[in-house]
Image 1 (cartoon, one colour):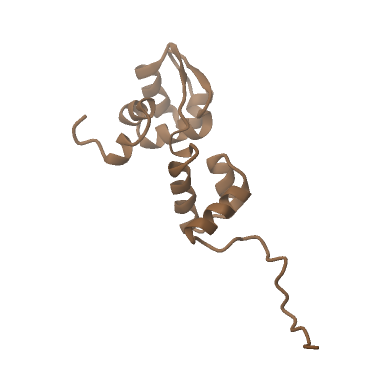
Image 2: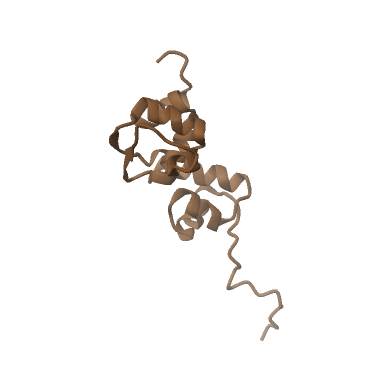
Length: 140
């Protein structure tokens, strides 16, 4: 694999193959949509097929050509637990995405996003501070 970008090489083998045959966006969409599950990849798809809807018709056809006719365990890839998930949370936080959007995108809870933000010193939580009181309390 010469001249393959390092971020592609960091993906699990199946997602690397998808990225190289159907494109990186297709590999990431496959992991986001079906990661952690077994998926039968048929030998042909049309525009109404769920793979075409998830990846786009062209990338779905490239995927079918490379891996069709078999069931595959689709890796979570960058949406897995650990450093890869943390990196995605950090990137989406920098883009200003709300915790709920990030949680849905990476498959975790909003609380996990808040904890990651706290650890990494990322964006302040989009949850209101329950203990913040804008009124000054008179001293006794």
